[in-house]
Image 1 (tube, rainbow, N blue to C red):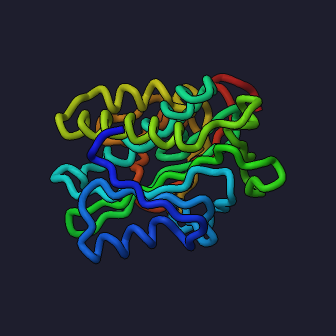
Image 2: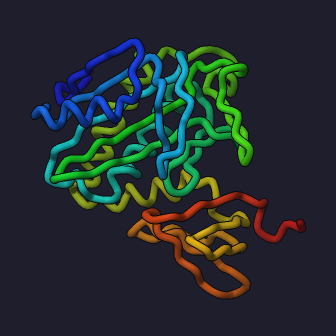
Amino acid sequence: MSTRWTIETHDTVTSTMDLARKRARAGAADGLVVVAEEQTGGRGRRGNRWESPQGGLWLTVLLRSPDALDPLVTVAGALAAADACSRSTGVDVRIKWPNDLYAGGAKLGGVMAEAASRTVLLGIGINANVSAGRLPSVEYYRTTSLALEAGSPVGLVELRETLLEELEVRLAMVSSGDPGVVEEWRARSLELGRRVVASRGAETFQGVATAIRDDGGLVLDVSGERVVLMPHGDVTLGLLGKAGAEG
């Protein structure tokens, strides 16, 4: 594994993000990775609670590099996680805009970033070997694990090391302005070509997701009108079906 990463492991924490933030305030260097077997207060996008039982891969990466504040850093994390899952198990993992990991039509995990003072905390959570009985029960979508999709458990250390290897490659691409990051994002997209319902503040749209822009904006065709959603702010996205499908 690259010498860039310094791994700090724990059995149970409230949140790897909270602990990494504490380490950052104490002066921890770029490349610290806080890992826990279990989180009792894990959070997802917009502060939503994310169940993080034993069997999952729960970690936060501290980034202090000059390009850490680039909005594509979150995308780099999602691509690294998706590729690590696929490399380790053969499971086809997709990215639901902007930062959720999906497999078999169900949510597998997610990525979130918190930025402050040229520092980014990149949180990644994957239901790796979480049993069916311990998966989060969510009203609006199904959840799954890598073990369920692959039919056998995945090695958590191998998965973590593969993820960090992929992350270093993607961060280098972001730093150099490589357009391949967004191209890979489009190739991994769950919603492109599909009908979606999206909420932005008090507005709701139904249309077809037609493109992901270079700045991360998701382009929708809403009855012939072009609507662009940006990954920051209060935006939610749900899948309805294939473009042109009835219902």
